Length: 126
Image (cartoon, rainbow, N blue to C red; front, side):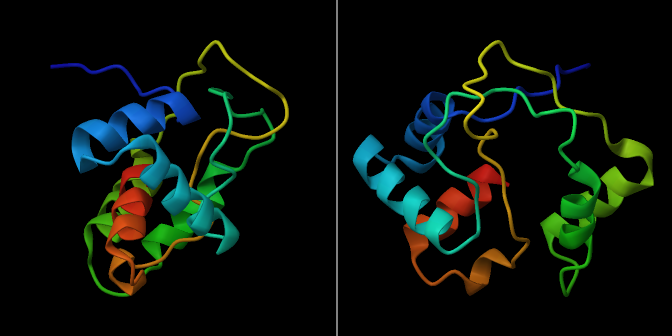
């Protein structure tokens, strides 16, 4: 079955997914997401942008996930993407031109994130 490529993550969609998959309320989610942002793990979490700028470089970020120690799910999937499986994300309709979509900024093993809520949010963003 073919599936549509996802639209990049904006705040409202992050809130919906966190509620559905992590059972987190909006306030708890945004507190965790802002903490991850302050630690440099994810981009600014309050954005309505659903499209990457043409200058956004996906490949170096994917490569950093492929370089994670061990054969965790992030490293394995990043290698699939690097070996011909990557396609640029679909562009959504909204672009506030202030911030990129919510995306990981740093590749880390999620088990190194001590706070369980933050760990879950990081995994959801990745």
